[in-house]
Image (cartoon, rainbow, N blue to C red; front, side, top):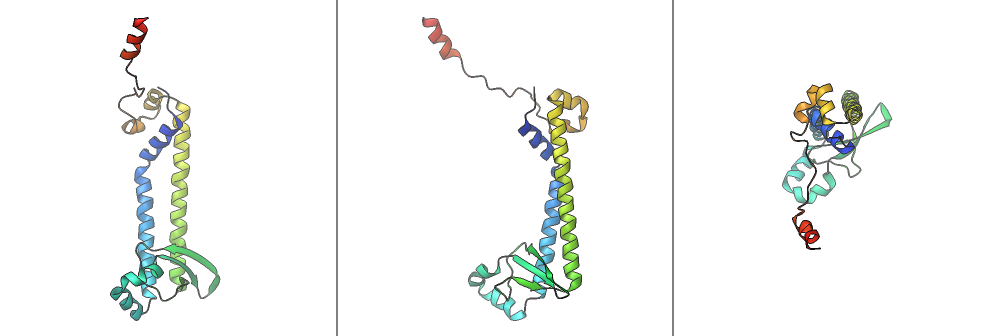
Length: 171
C-alpha cells in the first residue's frame, strides 16, 4: 500500500518524538530559569503584593518580558516565563546583568539550533518515506521504522453493498 504525505509526516514525528520531547523540556527549563531571573530583579514589596492580591495583579504579570543588558542597551531579547510572575514595570522591560543576559541568549540560541536540527531531520525522513512509496519497502529499507508503522495495511473502508445488490437484483 502506498504511503501518503500525511502518513509520512505522522511517521516522521512518531520516530522523532523523543527529540521533540527533549526540545520541549529544554524550553521549559529556559522558562523556569528566566522566571528565577525575573523574580531576582523584582522588589520584595511587589512580590508580597503579588502573593496577597494575585487576581488583580495577574493581568499585568503574564510571563512575557523583554530583557536587555546595561552594557548592550540596543540588544533586546524577548522571553517567556513558565508561570505568571510579578514585575514592577508595565512595560515588561527587564535590565539584567551581563552574565545572565549572555547565559539566556546562549541558551536560547542552543534551543533554536536544536529545534532546527529536529525540523531538518523530520523533513529528510518525510522525504525518504514518501520516496520509498510503500510500507513494505519502508520495512525492508529502514527496519528501524517498523515500530512506528501501522500493524495492518488495510485502511480502505468497504461500504455495505447489500442494499445496492438488492436494488440491482430487483430489475
